[in-house]
Image 1 (cartoon, rainbow over the protein chains, first blue to last red):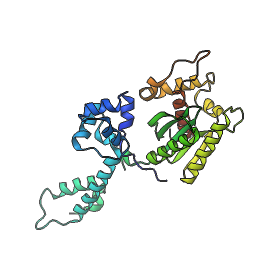
Image 2: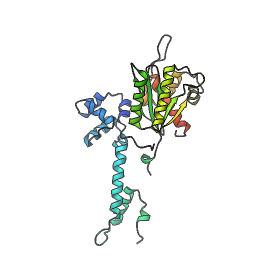
Image 3: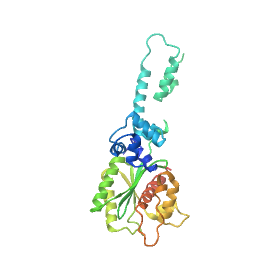
Image 4: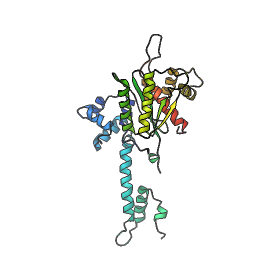
Length: 119
Length: 170
């Protein structure tokens, strides 16, 4: 079985903090602990404000709290960055095109030297 | 490749006891992901096995670490021995690697220089994971006291940690 990142680590940090699901629900501003339970069982993904609220509660970065979700989003961004690098600019190359390619290469984790053509 | 994308082995440590099971989920480099006790009543083996199945479904571990109830000196009751075998069967049906460790192996690995009691092992692990297990350490057992169910957590953590240590993940 291939090892994959867990969707989130909120249960771990909740247990570390000795908070109950009801406590966390109150802090998140939701009615009951059942929603917190669904996050912890990976059956529901939190919205942006909930993810930030989790960061505020546990003082841990969102990308560490939700590593699986982050990894999935990161892979999507990388793939799009690669596609964007493949697209050619219309017209005359601009001065900032090298910086743009460097940025995209960093996002896509591609070696810029290999991608860039010698000028 | 950054650290977040490195693959770590995830191991589920399970201890079958008279009340149910204790479990701990660990990933490489000393990360304790989850831990706890699942107490059952009635048909203890069937319900404990169901709980183990739920843990496997949830965490999808690469390996399961169990206590070797067949080792010399083990005094686990027949029901617990049977439950351990059932867990092995369940893991094999899910194609998950199973590793068993005796108490002696655990004591040698973690507290070779101290008396090999369960409490000494629990103290050692509570010091190693102070944020996660520091609050879970039960008071020291005295004459006439039953064993605290929280001790199962420490045994499960010891099994999982020893598995990772034997693989060179720590």
